[in-house]
Amino acid sequence: MSTTSFSVDLRDLHFVLFDQLAAHEQLAAIPRFAELDREVYEATLAEGERLAREVLAPINAPGDLEGCSFDGQGNVTTPKGYREAWEVLREGGWLAPSAPSELGGSGLPFAVHVCLSEMLCGACMAFMMYAGLTVGAARVILGHGPEATREMIARKMFTGEWGGTMCLTEAGAGSSVGDNRCRATPTDEPGVYLLEGEKIFISGGDQDLTTNIVHLVLARTPNAGKGTKGLSLFMVPKYEFDAGGALGARNGAKVLRIEEKMGIHGSSTCVLGLGGDQPCRGVLIGQENQGIELMFLMMNEARIGVAVQGHAIAAAAYNYARGYARERIQGQSIREARSQDAPSVPIVQHPDVRRMLMTQKVYAEAMRSLLLRMALVVDREHATDDPAERERLRGRVDLLTPILKATCTDVGFEVAVGAVQVYGGYGYIGEYPVEQLVRDVKICSIYEGTNGIQAMDLVGRKLRIGGGALFIDWMQEAQGRLAAATEAGLAGPAEAIGKAVQLLAASAMHLAGLGKARKVEAAMMQAVPFTRMFGLVLLGIECVEQALVAARLRQTRGDEPLLVGKQRNLEFFVAAILPQAIALGKSIQSNDESALDPALFA
Image (cartoon, rainbow, N blue to C red; front, side):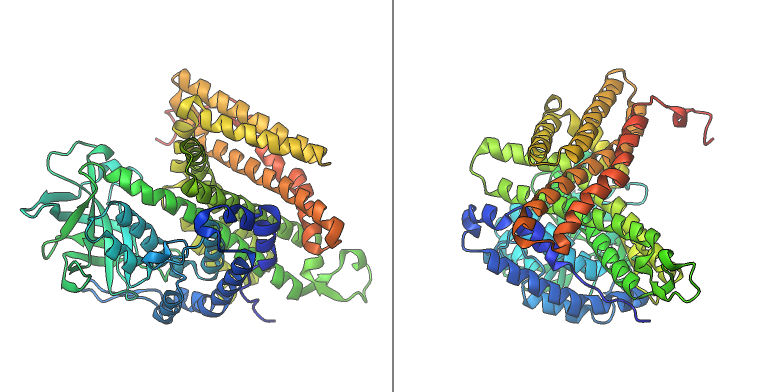
């Protein structure tokens, strides 16, 4: 029996991007993408799939076993094969596919970036973390760094010559970022400060892939106020550099140790000391006390990126499980089990295995659709010249980002666990690939703001903006899409999901009522269930739309398995997954506050 190989479902990517969303047509209306067409996008995806399969997938398991090493002097070595893979992706411009081409990126739409991220992260998530953080940091520097050097720095980061990190977390100041104690003391040189403190859980805090690393560090200047409003953002390089980018002396930002983690062993998670054995120079980004605002420019992009990671692992896990189930011979067919002469069959023929695979399939394909729809909203937001439309699209991104981050990462973990179950005992051992996926993806529900923080942001802030304007705008669009499905012949499923939308609205009103009654704790206790309910509704609407598109295409393309599968996905979702959303809505509105009893957990 052979271990199944990593694979990408290019057919489904094409279906979502071109058949369902008509992304090539939407993007053609954006001037900077006008010269790109479907042929270009298909060729890009094909090459991305090859790189994922031939360059990154082979280093995934070995990198997990080897992990990163630390020399005790502030230097980290990545696993064998990482440096060679970095150079391959760097030379081809694959590290920053949506960054401006004039600054070393590939200038592709964000929607295509998301497709490539699915492939590359699914092949080796730990490796791709170095690229994702670098690009996010580069965007902040490009927008708000020192004017004389910002483009030079961003170019070196977009091309992968330099790396980047974001440094928020401190011991005792994790999700509560406002408790940061790192100090920044001004020098006689304008805009330059000396930093002192320690940051923990810094992904990519050091590595041997790039010649320099630029850390974005939150710190507190003298006499700054308490909480997040007193934080400023500083650019802290590993090596000092001049205006042309030539490297100089080592700066006083050094790794003190690396963490031993549950997963993502190929990604160095570091404790970073600032100003310990020598001065640590940092350059102010933006204005004093603007740090949290600027950091959240990177954080929001990172949260969408983490949602993509969750989906990427789900897609990889499902593809592994499906391939294994086709190969693994065990047991007789249920239909022939009474016959002693009945042959053993692939486990894909067993009903419970098919149920597990169908659950994974529906989740993975609906998340792909949801994320690519969101990516196109981002592309349109950045392209439009209409201020009102830009504001509307930005509101949609703000509303959905915490839901996508929480839903795709929680579901990604569940799909990976389901893949282990399909493998059975073999899934639990390192010889096969899915146990690593479970360990790797679990961090996604924790970093860049735990999923509990995402839910609190949704319920405590996003739903309240403009008196619920963002939610109302989404509701109107969702009802319109379901009405269109009803008219096109999907009245039953559309009605079922429409009832869930109405229950979601009633649950939102219930939570708002708790807030008005000053029962904030009771409302926040339901934030995570509400976010999960919202996520399930979003996935259900994607299943409806995919089934509609499939029905139309079957008229000319016949009974292609992919198209039949989309219609079966909707049936399965309504029967087996949608009831979870209904149950969550009832639970949210139950007024149960038993967990808040002060006598508990003493």
